[in-house]
Image 1 (cartoon, rainbow, N blue to C red):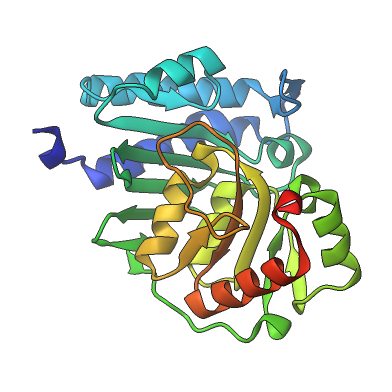
Image 2 (spheres, rainbow, N blue to C red):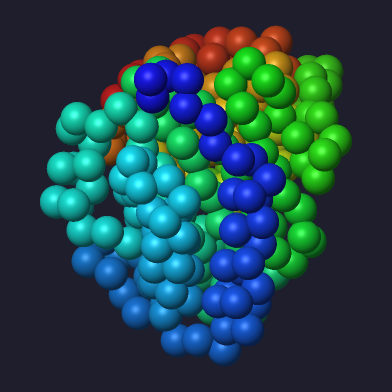
Length: 271
């Protein structure tokens, strides 16, 4: 039964490290980025990493197909229709950082089933951090368990805000009359999720993420005791290729404070 299927967690983690060492680190700050139709960019390292990981996973687990960020939309849509288990891969998240020489980028892989992410991994090559989680089994960084941490009140909290993808009215309001203490933006969704789950800041706001941006990191956060939703409080759908906004906190009480503030300040059309 595929519902009882087990994946070798250590083998997958070692595979992500190998891909980073063979294809990402040698090309870091040395490759030219090419624009894609959706406005994002891609490098040869993205493609080489995806090809390597797809081939290696297919040899070890031939019964599980893979959905990769660098596939066409048609290929991605077909894969999402009728498979019981599915790999979801971002072979290089933070490509703009990678090409420009900013040392914040990573590889993300999640194993999806009908209920969402069953297992997830994120590897940070520059800090050699391996994050992983399994449903109902906890989340870890380099073997250390990630756990709930109480956050301060919203007015004293520090978080990550991606202004570029927020509705303009919300972005302007957050800049001019911010309800929190301070914000950052690191340019790699998969590391931003991982660092939130590790308790390195308090909240995360993003206007439009793809499944491969949050599938693994969302599992980390849930297993660490955190909470995630869209900016209007709806569930994120781990079995659909739709962009979604993100509100995430490691402390569920802070999540409620954010939802209350958003509901008071903005109509849903601006979320």
